[in-house]
Image (tube, rainbow, N blue to C red):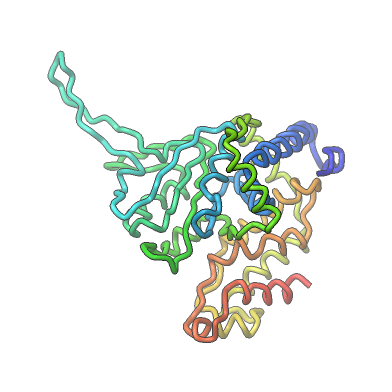
Length: 341
């Protein structure tokens, strides 16, 4: 990691320079704390950090036993934020997530009043564990929380704590007992990160760590909620040249079959492309990645590195893709190579 002097630029204000110094120290410390528990998965950890710095939400897709839940829990401890976990099951109800109003009676006067009891969504970091194991009715309870950082119960709006992040895990949809997430909910996730198997060396390291009977190391909090909000402000100060911003627009537009700039594979294999929200997300995420890389400017390399996890859940393939065995990642590879030359 480069030191803070390398991300300073003539356009950076004194306030931004101060926060940038804290940013470098804090993000390095977070990586170090997470590394006490989690072996490998550096790219996934970086994606989660970018999610937090942008103020978005992240969907982590992987097979059972790939430490998805452990990763999110460890990261929340390193951030020092209020953490809650929901285990999504087929019988979960929307009020089990948002909370509900109950009637309470005053023993002295006998007067009854409605009292709102907060659900587990009222946290800074919400782990939505195996989110695709609950039906769409319950999944939809997350839509307002993820977009507006609030929930509405019986006509009353209740604001969620700030900052607020949903870090959700899901099993591959081909597995038994899973439901496809609604497109509107998928679009609210900044990333869809694929958590793959470890290398043989990393798997051996996990074996040694977890079969020796030694307790897991203690995770120290490296930031506060106030610092995270400052870091989010800093990310938005990173400048983006007009040429790079145009590349971001061109990249997203190229995923739309109706756009004249889209490759033939997009026109043939995609039913729908990415929304305008994707253009905003990829630009913000590129700013955060630039800071994590020790730069105070965005490059097309940032866009290329982030394109697939940001776009793969925002494009919908058609039956031609299914019959030919073409995946969204394969289509996006072509889009990236043609657009970000």
